[in-house]
Structure formats: structure tokens, C-alpha cells
Length: 375
Image 1 (cartoon, helix red, strand yellow):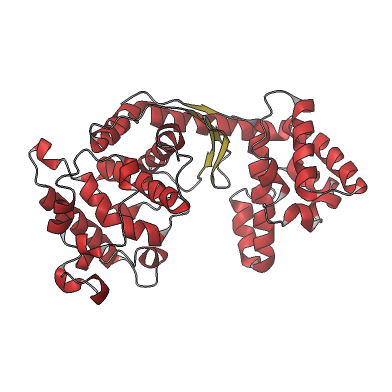
Image 2 (image 1 turned 120 degrees about the vertical axis):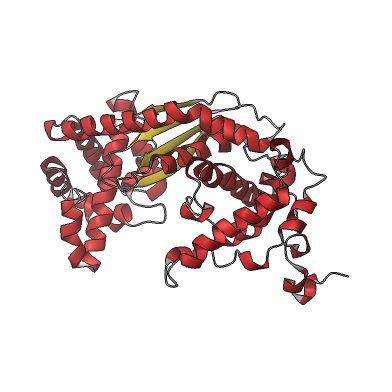
């Protein structure tokens, strides 16, 4: 497969924005659940460093104003997170001020407060207190980049094998901004049709295979399999689901042998993913014969693998709820394989035009509802 275009970097102001976002959200949660406050303090989310606490205390007009802390677009730090600091202080403050003013329709007094706040926010990034955080973030960034660089070829070759003869050409690049991992974030920002920014940190995720799967999604999605201008909303949902199976779930499975259900993707739409799942398996194993394997057998094994995982989940778990519509016991591996028998060259975009509502292609005859009955 063509080499991906991804770079890894640390932007000091983005790091600070994510730290402040964590402070705000943890403090708000601790007000509702006081017992959580000590946990957040222990994890370094609340009062992470003295300079940050002093900064918050110095700007009560910002931190006590619900307009900036609780809004439809998130808090003020979530809003200015994507603004790069690479052009220097004045350019950063100008762009951040403009964005905040447009988003919130500031009064004259609020405009003054925001300008003072942004000046001190930049100074905060230069505080000696913050240096250890930036140092730790750079170490974290290096570890994430090393995981990707060492495994990139294996991951992308695996994806190309599944795609078969369809080889997407990269039309864009991904800039991965690594955050200080005291507060989790996995957010993308599309700055142009050819540029995707990923903001990433996960203090709990120690499994390098899951990190690889998440990164694979980003380098494939917009840069290689972008939405087209003619796509409907549902077609975009279908393509996104396809990409989740192709990258997050199948890459993770190939690296570990574990169930697709063992990895949960960002903002996973359970209804769409459940409908795609049997058709994805047909697509995934449509060319199994090229490896001396049988498509029907491989599909059946995948269904059994995922059903076994599902059956072992606690009845009250979030994952049990997430995957409840997969209906593993109703799926017919022979039908699924047969549907793709003459579709070995199908492209991802053609895949999105399949009617996933049609259960005649995926369910056993005796499991079909009346309105899907075979005639």
C-alpha cells in the first residue's frame, strides 16, 4: 500500500487547552459527585500544577461565566484547541479572540476579559511549572510515534490485503497532536479537504494494538477514503462504519486474534454497525480462496468468535447493550458468502450502496421476520 502521510507533534497551547478542559470537566463532575474529587486530584486532573490553579483564580470572570464554561460548542478551551501556536503569540491570540467573539457574541466587558485571559494563557505556557508537563508530553509523543513507525507497514499491508485490487491514493495528510495524558481526548478537526488534525491522548490505554488501530482509522479515512460531495448522510454513515471495520476492528483482530467486539470505536453507532456487520464479513472474506481458504468457513468462524465474546459479557455491561442488535445466532454464513461470490472486485464506495436492511442475504430462512420472507 502507498505510504501514509502522518506526522506527530506537540503544540504547547493545545496541550494546555486539553489540561484546562480536564480541570473544568473534573471540577464540574466533582460538584455532582464529591467522592470523585480525590480521584481526580490523584490523577493530576484537578490542580495538576500550581501555576494552573493560580491562572484559574486570576480569571474568575472567565471561569465563573457559564457562557465560557458550559455551551453547545463545549467550554472555551475545547473551542480554541485546534488553533495552532506555531505562528507565535500575537497570531495565536488574534485567532483565538476572533473565534471566541464569533462563537459567543461578546459584550464590551467580556471582550476585555477575554483579551486579558488570552495574554495570561500564553504566559502560562512559558511558566516553569509547566515545563515538566511539556517534557512528559514529548516523551509520550515519542512512544506513540514509535508504535506507529515500527508497525505501519504491517498495518497498511493488512488493510490493502482486505481491499484487494482497490488501492486508494492518499489525497491528504494527518497531523497528530499528542496531548498530556492526564485527560483523555480523541478528536479530529478537518482544516481542509487535504488536511486532518487528530488530537490524541489516553492515559488508560496501554495496549499498543488498540493505539495502532485508532491511528489506522485516521490515516485511511479522510486521506484515502474520503466522503464524496454526492454522498447522502446515510451513505457517509455506511462508509464510516465500513472504515471502522476495515481499520479499528480488523486491524486489531489481525494483530491480536481477538474479537471485533473487544475494541470500541469513537462514537460508535451501534445501529449502523450492526446492520453493516454481516455484509462486512462477506466483503472481508470474499477473496479467501486466494489464500486457499473457504469464504463461508471463515465467515462462520468470525461470527462464532464474536458471539462467544458477546455471550461472556455481563448482562448489565455497556458493551452488551452496544452489541445487542448483532443477532449472531440468526446469521447465515452460506448466504453471506454467496452474496459476495460475484462481487470480488467491489469497492468501498460500491459497498455503501448495498441495502443493509435486506436480511434475506444474511439471515437463516427460519430466522427471517415475515416482511423479509423468502418467496
